[in-house]
Length: 58
Image (cartoon, rainbow, N blue to C red; front, side, top):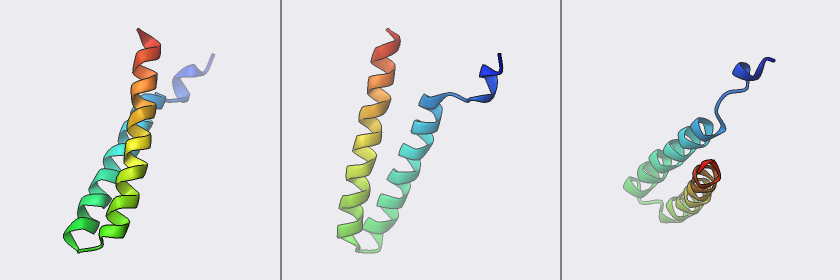
């Protein structure tokens, strides 16, 4: 009944993915390659979840 209040999980994941990429870029520019690697790994996991959601809708 109130499904419109839940939000789109893909949209939420996409926002989190973009935030991780931005943080990773910032870390790389500051020379913090360890944080960059960690953030990119987390971003890749989010991207995989987004891909799974997209394939589930087909």
